[in-house]
Length: 608
View 1 (cartoon, helix red, strand yellow):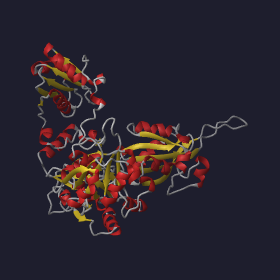
View 2 (cartoon, one colour):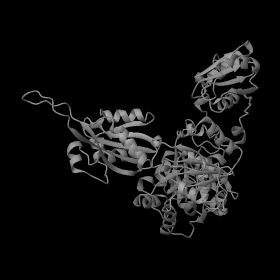
View 3 (cartoon, rainbow, N blue to C red):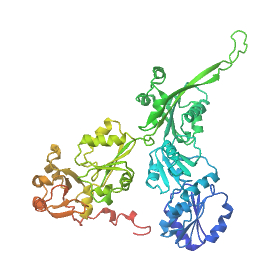
């Protein structure tokens, strides 16, 4: 919640402007509009401890300077000041060292990425931060792959050495020829006995605990389960969810687990859903009772989103006493009898949390190296192998590869050779980037590769790119959808060596008179032109032949449809030429309803 205060008339309009922006802030904050000295005197009674003080930001009444006064780093006042400065057009005056040096905020970065941070005293945390901001040798161990570790790896300061496992760090530290790190930062769901190095550990929420138990099992089994998780070397702080079958949703042990892990989500699954999951330790007896072959393992797998079990079913028991029994003859109280109550648990790790190989299919954009997406560039910078389509993708796109990365062109390699190379790196737990031109999902030839990845159960994802048809619109300075003229864009190709379905023949698509972007068809331009004319496009329809869009060699030729074949032949346009057809080219006559005077919701308040 943000409270905004002002002490004079001059600041009231500024205060209202800030309120209307609906600032995003997680916590308590006070924005004071007025002189800094007055602000300091007014907040003096609030000052207690930097870990509990509210964020306080002071803005002068003109909005020129925005100053975090209290709890700037831990409480978030620094970021709030930046947000307000963007609104007022002013300057955020930040004095926190880690913020000004661009170094990671070690005490708050866990909160930013949803990680829990190990419990350290304020002094220990401050010493660790001082070591880091003073650029002393630091080790970073990332044992998961998520948004946070992706950021850390891509923004590693020069005094930080990166490791993929704690074991690699230990080998490095024990090598007398290397500098001894004075600080260890570790992001891992594993619990290590770390000695001899000052450290901060972050626990990413990537583990999913599945549990099963006998009916009316005592609540105490919850603690035994967590003891088992710890004994297996995992941190309970990384448990993202506790999962079980609907039959057990009211068990006291489940509710106790949730109480002990208040940050974890409870996942309840039906017997039908769990029965579809193959488990490594199936039990016919469990199936008779529950309808699935393993509650703990199936529930953990269901919750971990295509991840894997890291601890298979563990069966344990706890002793309990029967209710007091009486003799049926003389009502004599008999001794309580102990009995064993059995329970099971298993642990799964999210797909994104698993440290394993990954293949990212990245769209390189139409050609200009600056037109790859920010996400795509980050993958290129982190990749252990970049396999790029050498005949279509500029090699300059690979120049951002990290030291030691392997960069190969797929030109001259058949599909099997490409796959074997990617699998070699994948099987070693490496990151592979398969770099395709444009957007890989449009004539990108990734279907066959994905079939291989699916067959071998490999983890992969697609980062979209800017398609050449979008680059054509930009370079032609044309809007391809014109109000009341054309509201459809057709992406297609002529029928060359690759057959086209009968219902998608060019003369049929031409009947729509839409903006048409034709890929991979310059070599059959005569057939393309005749099909378009036969379909109904007037001979005078505007066309554009776009060669190597956004490359240094880019050339664009405009004309009319009746001259299309001559334009391509006279200018020797063959490969990497897009043909654009339609009235949208260079059209400035359509008026978007967005700026129609009847749409008064776009006008400022009070205007007609």
